[in-house]
Length: 411
Image 1 (tube, one colour):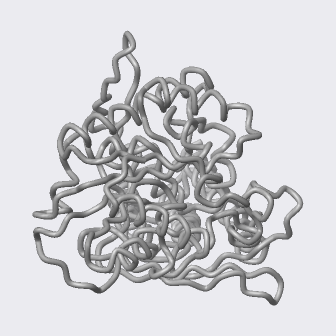
Image 2 (cartoon, one colour):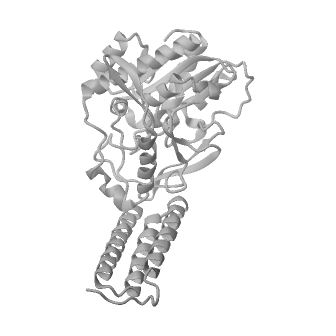
Image 3 (tube, helix red, strand yellow):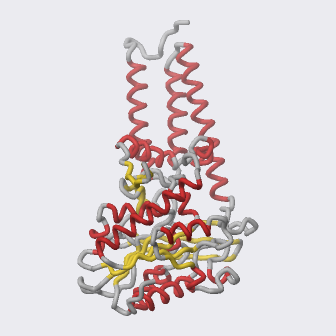
């Protein structure tokens, strides 16, 4: 069916309005994605109303049907987005996996959200923004589990003590994930801070740990000599890597939050670095933008997988990554490379990981060598309903490391 248009005298005017409006809304969408807390609400409403406006202006019936459908889809998706936002803001967040029967906690603070301190990084996948201080708060009912501040320095690492060190002061590098970073704790309660404080000026500490990291981030730092950019003239005398069981999974590339950084694989029993093409980086950036949709975040597990999980292959890759990190560090600095295993001995893979690390000649310390009663009194050494180490556990780890490193012992 052919009809007439409300645009008189120029048949190209509807096309121009549609094209111009779409470009304008596209640019606005980019702005909303970067600067607003719920960008897909604005995007959905704007496109829905724009399509309705075009349908009103155009009389050609099949154009109107297309535009009505586009408007309906945009607005109905916006309604679902609203529902997901409401649920996310008012529903409880599940507690840590370590306790399936633990009550639920609510998370808030500038740690997350559109203005959070997470930033994409071509090498590591993601890093914190420099020179920021963010709040992280977890609440159970009316009780505050923790309300802490994470402060990131200009080097994009979590800060250590305010002590001023000479450039020639020896240093210790600390690698790991949120356990080493100190999730749920204030700046002065992390392992690196307490180590530096207890060392009383003898050693400078650098906290390379961050949320969700695995052995691949440690290796990426060392593989390209990137840690030198951070430590400057300080000479590393030891590196400490705090490993947890999930690092085997992360080494295999199965962590859904870590898909932008470089990867490693075993080829003919040789560890090789996989250089992702730039298209993968930009696709990952797009994926991060889409993550700002609460609806798409709920649906994402239906189609996005971290690859086929092969526990044996993942363990092989984990051991190879740790061994290569050890070789690089000791070859470069002739210092100690220390692995602390925060790993329950009842876990099925504990005998495997300890024997494999020993076969690779890697010095390991089981966490119960440092905290003998940890598994009997776990609640005292972890944050309630969270599972991350408490300030007391970190104090004991830092004290152990200071005693051994300062005395020059080979652990």
